[in-house]
Image (cartoon, rainbow, N blue to C red; front, side):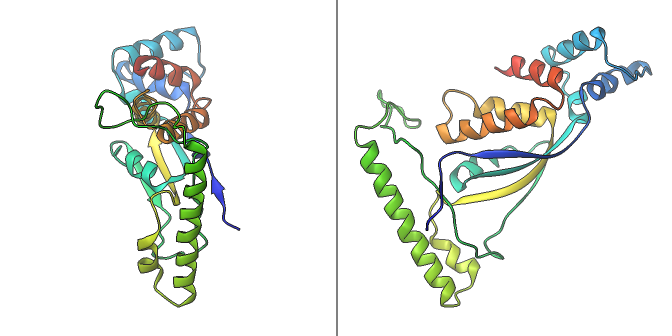
Length: 219
């Protein structure tokens, strides 16, 4: 049976640092260091974020596993500064593909805008059925090629953009805040915004004062 998902996910694997790490990284300029967080640190963190002193926020590191359709991954991968990532490769694995199919399909936006989407298309339900059929056909052909002994790196060529991929990425709090802010913009594609919200949910409690300050600056 074909597996379908309708949302992007981000799962916290590991982290290093917290709000005190951010405050101490800034405070070291004056050769100061503290062992406990207090009210002054909250004001310091807010000041750092609002005045674009971003380097202290890089001392909090986060590792996530993310699962999205290929087209979302390629948008997210445009963010290169402050992050390292490794993706599952279908050159080496030939497990059954999973497909992303949204609950609703949308019309093109009005006014000659080249990107984005408008309201829910009046054929959305029918389009979802078509998307399921197309994905099922791609799945069947892929599995048939693998069964014939075709190399996975070549069989993968015919899988569609809505095939789900997964990767692990490690980045700083500053990186994740910047990436989320861009991908949570109302002009971003809905599937990409899903990933932005999933990342924000996974990261927000690691250094909550710092995350709130950074996201207030960006959003």
